[in-house]
Length: 123
Image (cartoon, helix red, strand yellow):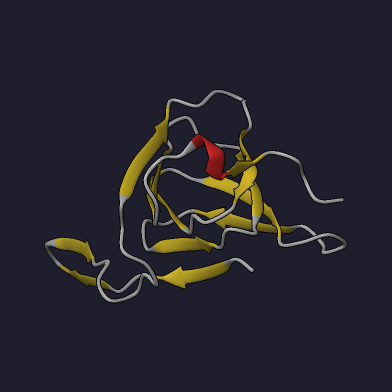
């Protein structure tokens, strides 16, 4: 089941510092960014092994998840760089409604493996 985390952020007159330390339940093996997205839908998959943590560094986007057959869809909006959505391997998900300036960073527990992807949605 997805889990929305609020990353620790320190703020003062100089600005904000958000820290990703001792909060991920996995070792980060891959980092990627999604940006410059038009009205397209991204994702539309789940994984066999990979845990992911999604953070919208700039702008905003929506992530819709379903955690298993017969389970309801859950909608999450990432609007602040301190919001982090933790996705388990069984969480089928898609991302859409990217703001024009959106930069979505994803931390992954596994290196890229095309055999790790499951594209069939739950019913």
